Length: 416
Image 1 (cartoon, rainbow, N blue to C red):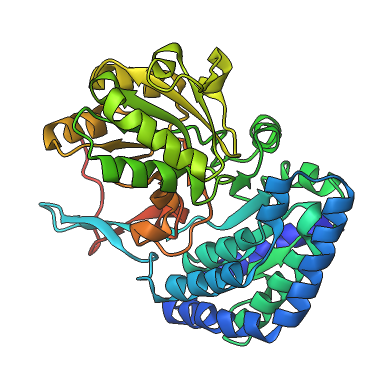
Image 2 (cartoon, rainbow, N blue to C red):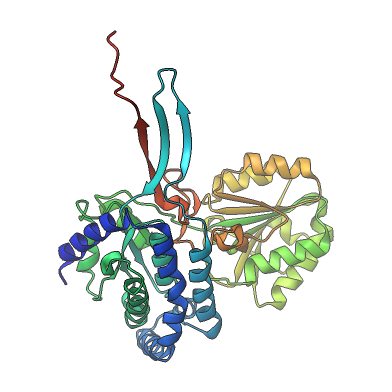
């Protein structure tokens, strides 16, 4: 496959998109759910073939689950496309403006980045989410999904491209790399003349490779080592609900809970009931020596547990002596992704949100809410633990940059 040709077509499409009205981009996105419905049978057939091939190659169960398009996942993809279509246009926003004493009018205005390259594994919903976020923000996108989902991704991409073209959007605005050859990724990493930003989504090895070998700026996150801290006053029903949802709603995703921190002041009251609720959901609970004082049959933890992103039904538990110790643990072992506190004391909550250095910090809410959709962002293309250019869920606003526009009336620079 000629990756340079794909890049050139994307660059040309980006130029067209930069002057295309937001209404046209929204109309294209609004047409995509129906386009997916029209290829539903072909999509499910392709997805079944991908799953069968992945199973033959010994793919682990959590990855197989990520690969599968169920009726729920299909509806989710359609809904996210519709939500993206309905969002305010992120392009052309006046971020700041002023009139200088000499009458020069200066403004900073949001504009598309240009061409976004997405390299990802397993989850086909990334295909629809990425296309939605990039198109909404006026960017062309080159999608390179994993070989295990190639059949599925091609059906999705073709349907979205058809809907886009029918609404006046350039056909090359959404392109998918139609080969499983890993050389395509190697070429993408060097296409700094065509691609402005790369976003890898997948395992640590993929993200590390892209980050180390790319000539192009990368928006990334390595791990989702997410924490929930149960403060001394945490209500029992809320503590149980948040722990179970954060861990069990989907164990294989990056904002699932991996470490539970329990304040010593409430450990006797809360730890046995929380562990019982997690075990009822099939979770293996591992505990530090202090935690095993309250639940004696916890699997002993090792130092490695505190830095592990399990992506499985395993949870590590540590008893901590106060809020400061909880924050210290999170900032030492966390990945800067998502961390939450359960408390009724707002002074503790405020201290937690101020002190924890993560992209998303929640109060009395499940870590699973940090994916972007529950923040009102519609579709997102990933969650960044970087601090530049984007941090946290990466939605349409995060895939814009800005330009300065100055309007004068024959203004010139005065001599010094």
